[in-house]
Image (cartoon, rainbow, N blue to C red; front, side, top):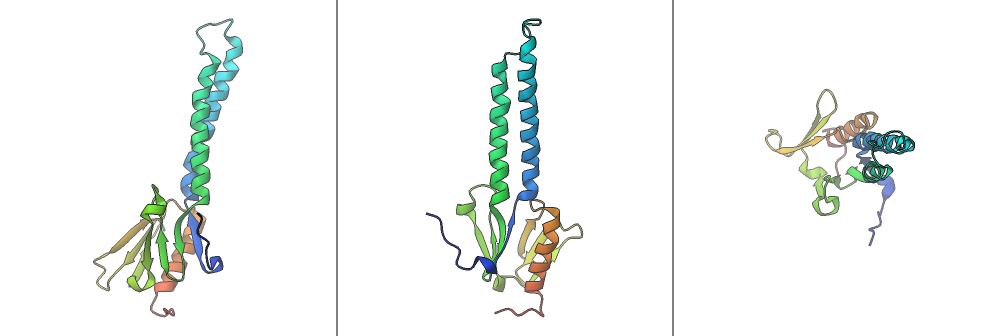
Length: 160
């Protein structure tokens, strides 16, 4: 059963689309190998040592798996900013391992210079918290995420 989102207009959803690029490249590499194996099949009469065209099935199967993973990463969320807090979805078993960090739990937020890591501090001394890698998110979306999180937890913002 799919849970319905009560107020989708009040959330920001960030996917692993930056990470999906690697899987798209792997899929295209597999397709290229498969097509090459099929193309050389017409020369088997001249050179019987060339691989059988059935060997093209392995790279095509690999490419299909990579395409499936790339589509999954592009569609499903990594971080969701909601009125309650930040929902964090891990790579494996995201429905089981999802973690909600409420805005009240976050005393401060920091982003490194390269905008590749987000740190959510749980106390004012900054001795406990969560480090989140922003590399799975597309580079052009990271600044939006950083502005949204830091703007929400900054002292001047209105925290309900």
